[in-house]
Image (tube, rainbow, N blue to C red; front, side, top):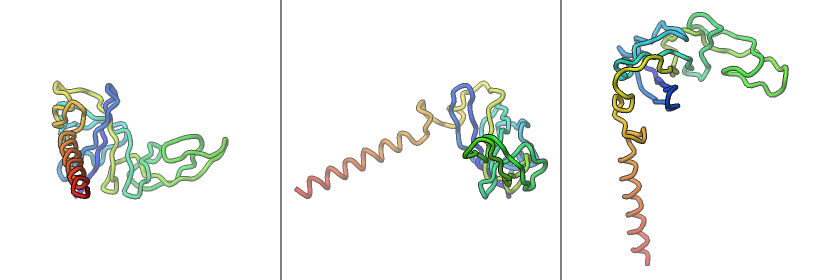
Amino acid sequence: MASFTVVVGDPDTGSSYQLEAEEQDANRFIGRSIGEEVDGSAVGLDGYTLEITGGSDDAGRPLSGDVGGANLGEVLMEGRQTGYHPSRDGERRRVTVRGREVSDSVAQINAAISARGSTDVSELLGLDSDGDADADADADADADADADADADADADE
């Protein structure tokens, strides 16, 4: 079965959320192309609509809107583009990219919120006000580590 990491960007706040889509939810993305919209409930954002903006395959090659389908293709790139950053002016290079269509070989999908639901994203994902679901657990772990370090220092004296 297909499984994707979906990185959802919120253009209003500038935040991004890394979510997982597996099995049935991942199938909602298969066959869709860059620029198409998907229901946000596939990643736990009920009432939201997501626009697919890009992604990469399991080898790290980017999805490119210049190549049709889901197959690999070579594109002659010039200027700064996704997947190519020239080192000098006028430099061109042939780069292997994956087509614009999402398939089983895609590992990560980038998406942006195009239509908002009535509930806030952080509430739907169970995040606290800082945008980090594990912030309290991290703070508790840090406090425990500090206490252990203090106890070890006292024992050495």
